[in-house]
Image (cartoon, rainbow, N blue to C red; front, side, top):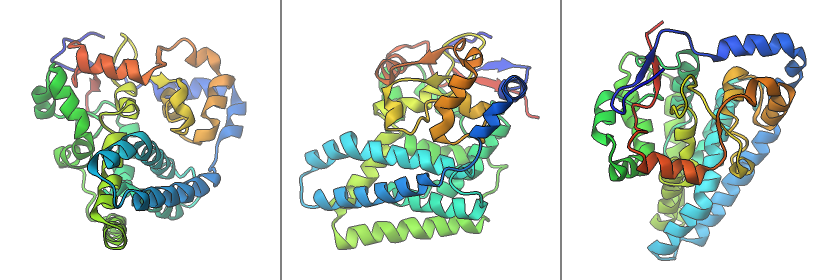
Length: 317
C-alpha cells in the first residue's frame, strides 16, 4: 500500500472494520455489555449550551483580540465537544429513538451556529458504510481541493482554517448523487440555528455571535483539536488506513480519539470506548496510533509527504 504525495492509495480489498468487528465479537462476546445509548450525554449538551451562551454574553463588549483568544482557548474546546455529541446522536447513542437523537443533535448544534447536525448524520453514516469510496465518502477530498492544497505548508494551513466550510459546503456539493435537502429534518436544523443566531445577535451583540462562529471554525480547523480530522484516516503507516489517538485531549473531546474502536463497534458510546480497548487489547495495541495532536498538526502542515492525497480509496460497491 504505497502512494506518491500527489495520488491516493487505491486498494482492491474491503475496509478493515467489519472483519475486525466479527473477530472481536467472537473472541470477546462480553463487549456487547458495552453497547447502548448513554443518556448522560444529553446533560452534557445542556451544560455546554449554557456555558457557551454565558461566554458569548461575557465577550459581547470586548475587543476582537479577546474574542479571538476566548474562541481559540475555550470556545473551540466546547464546540468540538458539541461536534462529538452530534456524532453520538448520529449513531443513536444518546437515546434509543432515532428522532429523539436528531432533536438532541440539533440542540447540540445551536452554539455551533452553522447548521450541520442532520447533514452530518447523512454523510457520516455513508462514510462508515462506504469508507474510501470516492463517490459516497464525504470524508475524502475532491481532486480540485487536493490539487490546490498540494504540498504547500501555507496552503495546508489555510485549508485547515477554512475546513468548516470545506466539510460543510464543498464536500456535499461534490457528492451530487447523494440527495439530502429533501429531508424535513434538514430544514428544522436550519431554522433552529438561524433562530438561535438571531437571538444571540439581538439580545447580546454581533461580537457574541462572532465568538461562537470562531469557536466552531477553530475547533475543526487550525487548532490542536482540528488535528483530529487528520488523525482519523490520513495514512502515516503502510497497511493501515484508520488511526486512534490516545493522548490527553480525549478528556475534553469525549474519547473521540478512539477512532479504530469506534469504527469497529459503532454501538459503543463514547464513555465505553476505553473499556472496549481494554477488553480487546490484542486488536488495538498492535496498531499504529497517535499520542500528540501538536506533533500531528506540525507534521501535517510541514511534511510535504503528507497531503490530502494521503488517503486510502477503493472502488464503488
